[in-house]
Length: 379
Picture 1: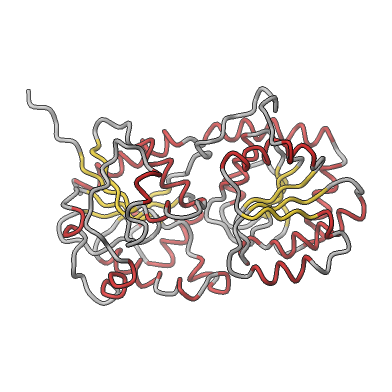
Picture 2: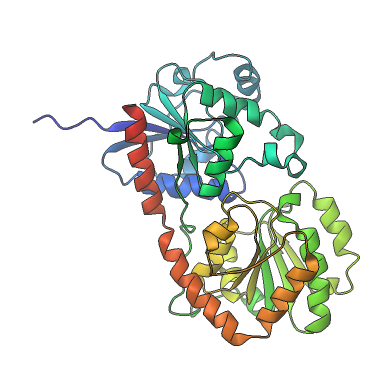
């Protein structure tokens, strides 16, 4: 009996080029899990001239990365206005193309799906840089061309359906997993830590790019309140300097306790893990989220979480985190202080967090996506 033909799936993987964010983590982790699926012949490509060689090193060697060079700016300029040249001229003819960061180039033969991580460029344009503005046009065009949509949460699924007036049957919420470099800390924190992190003592940790959406300005204000009541605790922030960093910097120099704030910039996966395993509390004051990986990272390492009750965060964390109003430094400070002063409450959150993260794993994400690809290919 002739074996069934493997489904050819191509992933748009430009998010792995440069410093890896949550979307880059999604691309790498999903690709690694999908590469183990015997029913899928997996390839990946990038719409990037300078990144076309570097991205290969971020993905498993079993994934084909053959493609013609694709200069981003000229192609995006043309694709905003035309369906030519089709993607297949650059990568061949896969059965399904997955735009993993809301970008799905015009195709003539292949079926398409795009991941919409959130609709912030439309619902919260003040939180996005101007170069995100063509985003809506690109997403709408892909939907008009029949593309399916994957979202990381039901919150975003509902936003996509209402924003783009798309058939709900074509929008599928499939949650992400905890980052692949993390291992559950159910046995405690016996793993080796970076000596620098151990010397920090008790600290609050914030992870993510400095940008208005993450609202680190109000986190700094909250920390000044916390530091006035707790003479030992510090604040450590790890993340790239994004747009809006200047406001963060201006706020930092006004703090009464600025000497107890450590900004590390972008850190490696190894340092990130060390920071998590030595943290007392993770603070996640975002004003809008489509999913939110850092709270899950913290939970998987036995670190209690204080986050905001916005977007998908309540859906993702359930009852395993303390939630507060967004943009409210006083509420954020009070919640963190209560947690710092209550060892039993911290212990309860740790137990709940370790249980909560069990429902998030990349194998399940990849399996659900694989089933969706097969459905799309035969639709």
